[in-house]
Image 1 (spheres, rainbow, N blue to C red):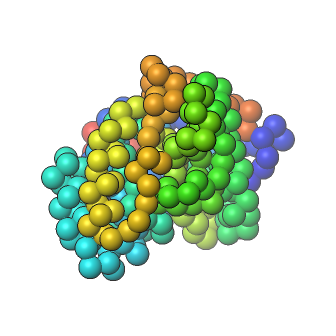
Image 2 (spheres, rainbow, N blue to C red; image 1 turned 90 degrees about the horizontal axis):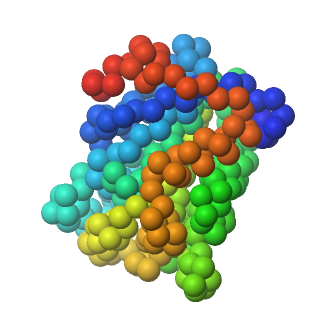
Length: 255
């Protein structure tokens, strides 16, 4: 991976206009990674707004309350699924923006931790461009805690910080997938489903850390954040907008 502004390869941007379903959306990210590994696609960013989903980590499934947590999600209208990456349960819905960045790379394992820091800062920069006081770093009591989470501060109360972006990475021989979930709008359902599911799992956390960018910047919407993200990404690499249905032979109406 190259730093911003140093001649990184062109990135193809594809917008998936409609979710394929919670599981199919995650599977498609891995399918794209396989295509990158095989040399069938180059560096690609896939953007989409997901259906209500709670993605549990592998460790969550080993807790005695997992089945109750999954049912709590269904009761709230969220589909529970288990992702291959680590971490704890994370919730998202159509008020969030998922960013899947896929690149072929001969030595994808090298620099994997650096990738977390680099893209965390890129995402925080994009949110700042959209008016959010954003920074990188875990905040006490956050859900699905991570060293490179992106959080935002309340302008009226700087001591109040909420998690806005969670990131995950999958590395295989020949390529990597860096996935980010940006929570932009409508935080109440996310906070509610996380409260119920974490209680069932028996995990401590602070519900006040769950929120959306629009809680900090009233009126902020997903499209504005997407525009800021692409503008920021343009400093990392030249961008090319492509049609999702034709990119790498995918049909936007099929998994």
